[in-house]
Image (cartoon, rainbow, N blue to C red; front, side, top):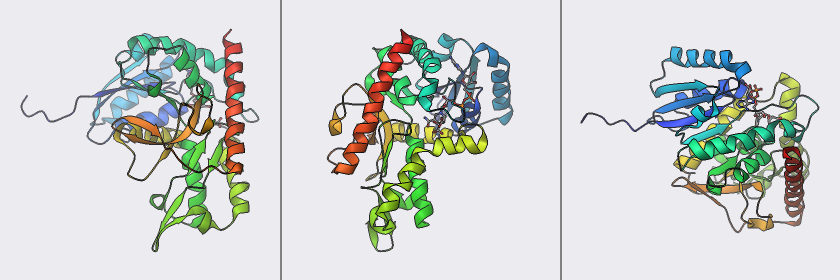
Length: 336
Ligand code: NAD
Ligand code: LMR
């Protein structure tokens, strides 16, 4: 009617929706945390047959929560029905690691899921669907999805390293007793694994006397080059040790941050970290999904160019690239 001012709903797929991250993220999406308080959504929830009843329970709770922005819920174990016309796909489905495992230890179980779901997304999702892979090994699952869905533009397939980015911010905030809005431009380079390189060389803090480099204010290069890096690299394992379950609320929140910034844009002068298809920037071999600093505008990300890379950083950026090259060949050996 002429009174209609509401935007058309966006269809958001969450796979693995009966799991931990699924349970944390669906209310965030339905409350507008991901796409904005004026954006209605239709949730598509996918899980597998053994979780069908639990998935239906999640749907019941979404109905009971009476979210004003939620215009519909499709809860299904049929991957084709789940992918139909979705504009955004949050790929959480898979198996998490347990204490003592590395993320690549869940490789053989998870990459085959991504190969299978690539085809369904390619054939049934909206043509411009934006894909975020969360399930581990996240970068390599995203690469498998990309390779088995050749008609999805490579710019539309990403993986989550925003959690690592936020963890790096968190460590700096604790150290400086600063507020999250005052610290920006940390970088996560590479793999969402223990070889990732959290880099603070370009990060700044807003102070009463203007912007200062994090390195200057922390004034402890030894901490920044050792314990800080190790803490961020090992944070996923530390959460598993403490909770006996892998991170969920922080992962869900980071996934919302990733999509929000991708769709609605990054604030001026600020970059974020996203796992994206490498174009050879910073000497990283093309054909890997690698985490870079990116800015986003009008629904497109671009890698921040021209940052000065010192020798310490170069070694760490290459080490995590090398792990991704190994993971890629391991993934292919699992698929064959
Ligand atoms: P979970 O076990 O609680 O939930 C996973 C869900 O996926 C389960 O309900 C399971 O039935 C479902 N599933 C399995 N195979 C599926 C398939 N083929 N299609 C659809 N659904 C399927 O796990 P979780 O704690 O929610 O974690 C999910 C994944 O996210 C794990 O791989 C975990 O390691 C990863 N993770 C990544 C990050 C990151 O920052 N990238 C952070 C946290 C967790
Ligand atoms: C995380 O970083 O918390 C997740 O990737 C879960 C894990 O296995 O570490």
